[in-house]
Structures are given as C-alpha cells and as structure tokens.
Image (cartoon, rainbow, N blue to C red; front, side, top):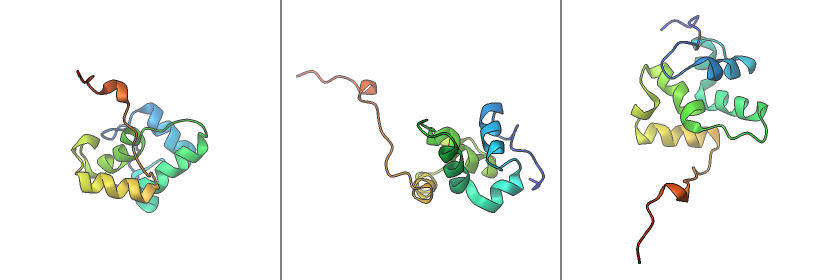
Length: 103
C-alpha cells in the first residue's frame, strides 16, 4: 500500500473514523506509518476530552488497516502492545454482558 493512500476506504476505516484522524493530522497511510497507530489514537483521544474512544475502532483498526486485516484478527500480543504503547491501562468489561449466576 502506498504512503499517499487515504485512510478512508481502508479495511476497518469508515468516514467517521477517517474524519477524526484527519482532524488530528493523520490523513494518509504515510501519516499513519510515521506516527504509528498508538500515537494517532492518543491524538484523537486528546482531541475529544470526555469521550470514550473504543480501542477496537480507534486503535486496533489502524493497525489492522496497515496490515490489511480486520481488527479482530490481530493477535493478542499485538493488541497488548498497542494498548501499552497508547497508555491504555485496562479495558473495562460491562458486568451486564456476563451471564447471571444462579446460587
């Protein structure tokens, strides 16, 4: 994939995500390669204070776009490295998704 290729239209990248990254200076594959997915994620997160930026859409998706794969196909090790590089300490899991235990 060429550095001049726009993010919009790459695997995992739709118009909303592409617009948010473009607003922080990440418009092309070359831009993303230079700063990396973790830094791009941090820039978008910083530009939207008080808004939760899901890592699957705003962090893993960028790596998946560079690799040409769906974000969910990234290995656990790759996802953990991305989280570390982006400074994301821990993902929260909603207890409402868990099955209720019967006592």
